[in-house]
Amino acid sequence: MQRADIRGFYINLDRSPERRALMEEGLARCGLGGAITRFSARQGDDRPKGISANELGCFLSHQAIVDSIADDRPTLILEDDIYFPPRFEEYLSIILEKCAGHEWDILFLNKMISFTDMRAVYQMIRKKRAAGDIYSDQFRNFSIEECKGLYISGAGAYLIRPGAAGKVAAILRKTAEDNYPKPVDITYLNAINAGTLKAKFAFPYILGVHSQLESTLKQRAGGDNGPLFNDILNLFVAGGDIDRLRLGAFDAVHDIPFDADAFIASQILYRRLTR
Image (cartoon, rainbow, N blue to C red; front, side, top):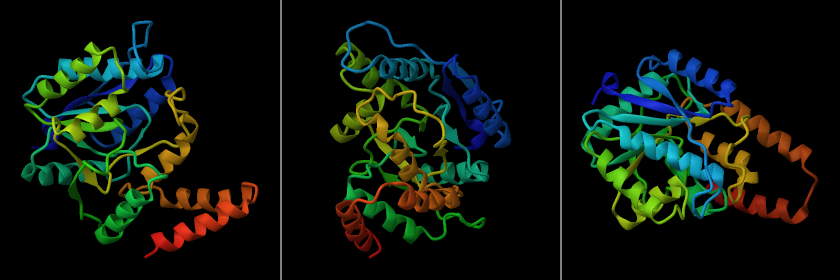
């Protein structure tokens, strides 16, 4: 599988031209401007559903793209808050070469982990240490990892393997027939855990998220914690902006009112995570 084989879409609301401009600039910079086209995001409506209107619009957008895929090429699906590291083009070529030796239907180029799940955070930090300096210009030590047990959510950047689009479409169709009880990424999570969807993720991640952009899914449970989820994701992006994350961490120490219990607990966790 070669980078030249990839076709895809980025999902963008008509009312978000600034995000469209960021995406077009990033895609042009990494040589994918002609391969990845804009998909005008669907809007949620009043049909029966167990999710918010915004989550429904997101689901319908992903579903429409998956339904449109010709199964002969790998398809990249992106949401419009994606950050492209400077060497993304090279990283993508490495990942495509490495994933050839694995069985997968979906390959996530980043994913969320819960900052409340210390076991998962610890596992990811250990993986990061073992990989080496992921911010170095010479870094090439990528791996393809199993999602089961480490994926909790996120559908901002993923590849669908040639031949797998029908399987992914059927999973989404079943959820739609059940009146959309879960968002699209949790639908993927449930299918991964049930063994009906073979999912891998690239590690370290090769795409980040723009933390300064407000989530279009703020209605989602835990939506107010979006910046924290974004920061923990960006911690594991090869070639990412580690200086910004460090500054954010230092600023938080000074800007947030002191809480003795939170401070003591954070130091206990810090000592555990540094082992």
